[in-house]
Length: 164
Image (cartoon, rainbow, N blue to C red; front, side, top):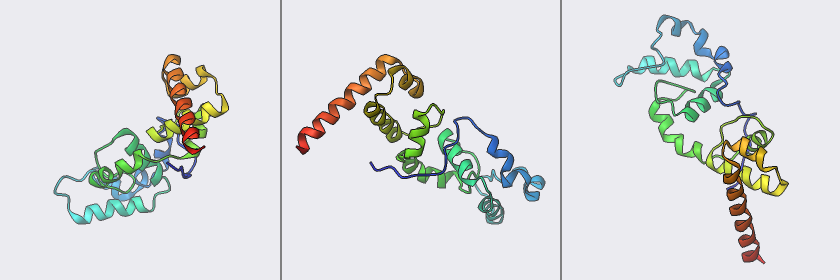
């Protein structure tokens, strides 16, 4: 899978972006605290108002990413309803961003999708990253890292044999 770039990754658990969220200061949200949590029969006007606030938000992407990472199913997050987030969840989990992979390899605690984890293992094998470092980054045992690196080396050898 080819990786494509995105903005600098947010550290896992970092919620400081919320202070800059449009919903945190919007007068409409102050008057109606449940504006971003419409019921199942939400009226269209409130939904449009909430999404309108999100559309002008400087941290909309961070909000959406956090909601997708945590599997947050409640309310409007990042300008999307629960149903809209469910519809893109699969695509989100398939992303492979080299900036995120490099950040993780450098020791930043960022959420990695499965393709990003696989890319991290590939990069680590090529750069001969230490096993303890890779175990810390992936939050797995050193024995598991050794297994992952063996699998990666076998896959590379098989790939080179098939192409050569």
